[in-house]
Amino acid sequence: MRIDEIIATSGGEPVFSFEFFPPKTDEGERNLRETLEDLRAFDPDFVSVTYGAGGSTRNRTVELTHWIKRDLGIEAMAHLSCVGSTREDLQEILAGMERAGIENVLALRGDPPRGETEWRPHPGGLSYSTELASLIGENYPFSVGAACFPEVHPQAPNLASDLHFLKQKVDAGASFLITQLFFDNELYFRFVEEARAIGIDVPIIPGVMPITDVGQIKTITGMCGATIPDRLMAALDWRSTDPEAVLQLGVAYATLQCAELLARGAPGIHFYTLNRSPATRAILSALRLLQPWVRREVVRTA
Ligand code: FAD
Image 1 (tube, protein in one colour):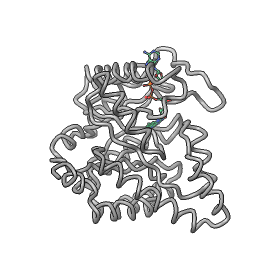
Image 2 (tube, helix red, strand yellow):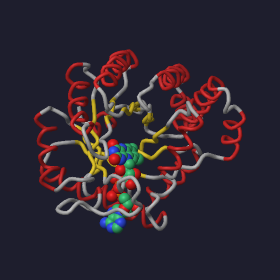
Image 3 (spheres, protein in one colour):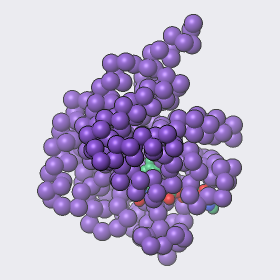
Image 4 (spheres, protein in one colour):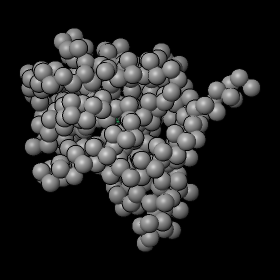
């Protein structure tokens, strides 16, 4: 089923999704497939599979997405970036996705290769995700999603410029957006408000990453430009020699973060799992028990 339809027909229930990346080895892929099989019991609305910056894992994106949808019966979305591909290469990949019965694609530009800071499109390729969204919208039957950045994309000069191009991306056919990870919900709510003010009216699903390891989250936020609030950073540093305590804090923090997002109107949560789902499963289980989105209705009618 198309994700835009899943959201439109959810009847106010939040849409929960899990993101995974294709492992580099066969053993890693076997482990991931077991994780995904177990995930069925948690009934996610969809699972998404990232697209590597290059190399062998790229083919695995389509294979894994196809397998999740066909064999597990979970709706799935393949990510696709413009990095290292000509327009024709992208058309070939998209045709393969269509043959595989995939219905959802996250259209991305991708990042410059490691060591380079400036984005240069591949010769004969596409410059921005908007062009990929147009290419898909004009030629393929997919539901197209795209990325957005509550803390402003690291290469954008400011929020106004980033939102201007985000609007173009939506006009080109992106029918839902997934945010970069963030840890301060006010960033998300402000971003949504600014986006609505310039006419971006598609669902904006917050992307949440439960912190499970201090070193790892510092590396990831350093790369993607997300900030960790000082008080959270201090609490993590204080526990940095106790991995279990970090994990417990990470799960507790993300659960409260998601509860507030849903209580204040977010259409769902996209979990960045880093291929390890126990933390996400615990958070999702607590959310389903607590149902903060139902309390939202009570507040509204009170
Ligand atoms: P774009 O929308 O093209 O924007 C990039 C920059 O260009 C922004 O600063 C924007 O303001 C600016 N811009 C846009 N259009 C124009 C224009 N016409 N003229 C001038 N400037 C313009 N990366 C991967 O490699 N694989 C993945 O699977 C992957 N999955 C992701 C999933 C999510 C939910 C998110 C949030 C990110 C993901 N990324 C992935 C990372 C993403 O590719 C990078 O963050 C990348 O730097 C930006 O991608 P984009 O699609 O938002 O780019």
